Image 1 (tube, helix red, strand yellow):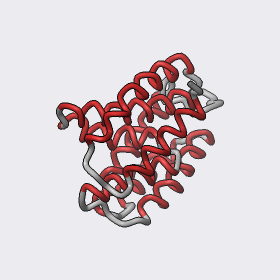
Image 2: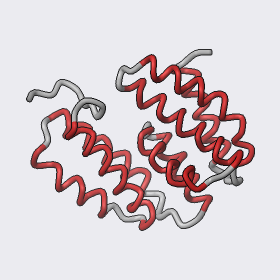
Image 3: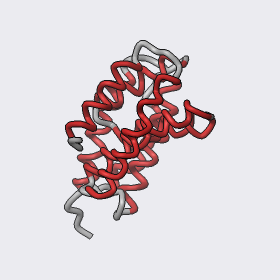
Image 4: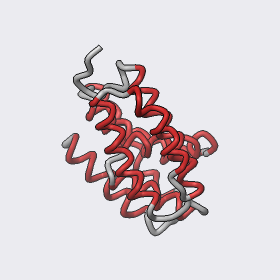
Length: 174
């Protein structure tokens, strides 16, 4: 089957590549070493079409930048990693990284994290051309993002929130 675009919503290979890379990135962030990501990449590379290889190479470049900041060893490092992922445009990875913490969170923290997940998801859907879903998610994100004052303080948090708001405004003007 010829592939014209990277479509994890309609292409199983693309979805598996995206998901497994993202899972490996979480392990790589914890160790500060790229080995888990490189192992996934090596396993997929021989069977990938050009469009998948392009995605893989772009992701690896972004991951290298983020991993260059060192291992995530505490809460502040976690927020710094999120900000770095966002800065690299790795919105699916932001979504995935937040999701684990969101599942354990309660109350306003859970709502605020959900807002960040929705913001990242809106941009993932926008990239895929799913505009209706993206607009809906962006609206829901905007409603929850004011609750971020309940999140643990980190020097990276204000910059991340500003970048999230800026991206939502640029992609989905109010």
